[in-house]
Image 1 (cartoon, rainbow, N blue to C red):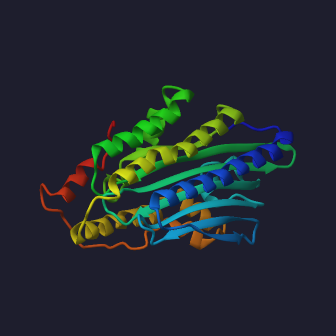
Image 2 (tube, helix red, strand yellow; image 1 turned 135 degrees about the horizontal axis):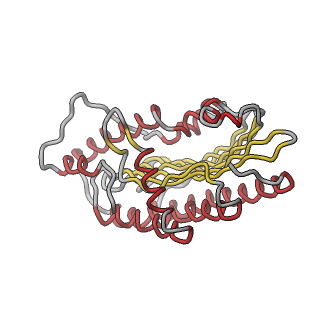
Image 3 (tube, rainbow, N blue to C red; image 1 turned 45 degrees about the vertical axis):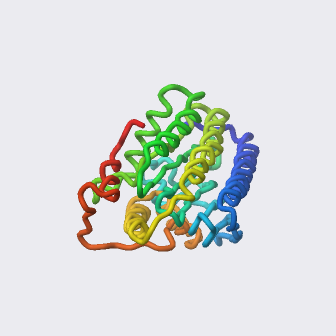
Length: 307
């Protein structure tokens, strides 16, 4: 991992934090316009061990059943086990972690659930240069899939990666497919998108620019899909299938998601960490959709696909 000159640390942290706060503002304002009724309520919080954040949640909007757009900046004297398990060189270092994380759960089953996250970590030790990296990405979880939606989502992701090299989108798309995979279900969580972590080999400026490109492109990827689907009528059958498939979302977040584990292990605010959970979900033993039904179509999409 690259190191950063100590004299650059404070400025770098301030610049990343300013961008993340602005990104949270922009996403919330734009999603409120797309919803047309709901508004995000802000809840600021402090972490006893150091740091805090501001959580913004919309409930029962016109389009968004529940959605959260959270900013956090936490710090401490030692990295948690979830961070040092694969990075033993970080043990004994103090750390700062900041990011924006969001999950949107719409009312309408024809609008996919979406998730996005961008983050920055820096670990320091007296007498040694700081170790830092960026991470993030976004992924889409449809219940009733439409090819044009998936293609638009991936076209936007590809466009935001293009200035950074031809290999960036295919590599980070594959990482997303691999990461958001429910091994016990043998299926992907949705149709994927981008996922990256430990990014520092480009140097700070280029890595920071890429993280900004990913964060800023989320609205371009998601809002046109919302606008296209929000007027589509649905009934109880579609609603019940949506709630059933939301159960998979819960399973992934509680069993596999590293961000959830990191937040809990660092003593983060539980309400904010579990903001990603849907407001309603259900499980049904042995459910099998009728062959050839719209619900059955989804299963063929839950595998890595070149869009």
